[in-house]
Amino acid sequence: MDKKSRLVDIDKAKGLAIFLVVFGHIVATDMPANNEWYAVLKFYIYKFHMPFFMFISGIIMAYTFPVMEGAKGYFKYVFKKLKRLAPGYVLFGCLIYAGKIAFSKIIHVDGLPSDLYTELYNLLLVPSQSAGGSLWFIYVLMEMYIVFPLIIGLCSQKPVLALVAGVIIQFVPATNVFMLDRFCEYFLFFALGVVVVSFYDKYLNVIDKYCYVFFILFFLSFFTVSYFSPLVSKMVIGFFSLPALQALMRSGFLSKTSIWGMLGKYTYSIYLMNTILIGLVKGVLLKFIAWDGHNFLIFAPILLLSGVFGPIFIKKYILGRIPFANSITS
Image 1 (tube, one colour):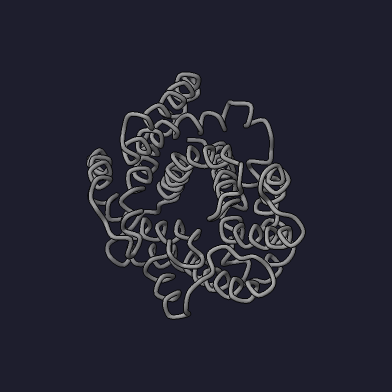
Image 2: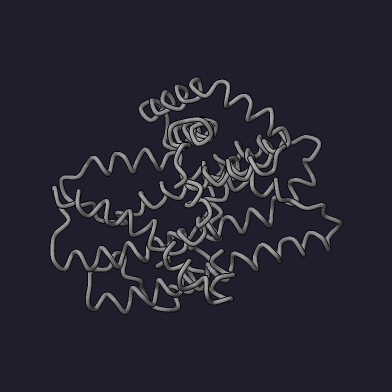
C-alpha cells in the first residue's frame, strides 16, 4: 500500500475522532438546563466515536508493527509504547487532580476529586473514576499494546479468531479495575483495525466505491437503539461507523479541508489537555454568566474551540520548546 496516502488518510480520521471526543467533553456532568439537544447528540455520538477511535488505533498499530523476534523483541516493543504513553498519562492525571483542587476555591469545578490516596488508586487502577477520568482511553490503549502483539503472533494465520473473541468478550461481565470492562468493550474494534491492515488496499477500494452504501447503513444502524440493548446497539452502530466515517474522510465533503489533518497531527496533545482547557474556560465564563438555556449556544462553541485549539497552541508554542514535555505529548 502507498505509505504516504495511507498516513494522510489516517491523520484525517484521527482528526475527526478527536474532534468528536472534545465535543463530548463540553459537558462533563450536570447538563445545562433546556439543552436537551446536546444531551441527545452526545448520546448518539458516544455510540460510535470511541469504537472509531479504537479502530483507527488498531490500524496504526498494525501498520507500524515491527518484525518481532521472541520474548526480547516483545518486551522491547511494549516498553517503547509504554515509555511513550505512560508519562503523559500519569503527569496529566496528577495535573488535573491538582488543578481541580487548587481552582475549586475560585471557580466552578466539575467532579471535585476525593482524597489523595483514593485518587492515586483510581489513577493507577480505575482511571474512569479518577479526577482525570477522560484519560481512560490512554490507559486502555496501553493495555492493547501489551496484549495485541501476542494476539498477532497467535492469530496471524486465522485473524478471524481475534474478531470472534472480540464479539464474545463484549458480553462477558468485567470489572472496572484495570479498566477491564472497557478493554473488553473495545477489543473488537481495535482487532478490526489490526485485521483490516492485511488487506488494506482492497478495503479502501471497497469503501471508496460503495461509500454511499456505508453511509446509509451507518444511518440505519441508529434504529437499533430502539430495539436492542445499549450494548448491542453500540456494537452495531460502532461497526457500521468504521467504513462510513473513514470513507467520509477520504471522499466526502469533510475530506476537502485541511483542518482534519492538523487535528490528527496533534491528537495526543488534544486528548491530554482538552478537558483542562474546557474546565478552565468554563469556570471563568460561569463567573459572569450562567450556561443554561440559550446561553449554552454561546458556551458550546467557545468551549469546543478551547478544547480543540488550546492544546495545539500550548503544544506548539510552549511544550514543544521543552524536550521532555514535547516527547511525552507527541
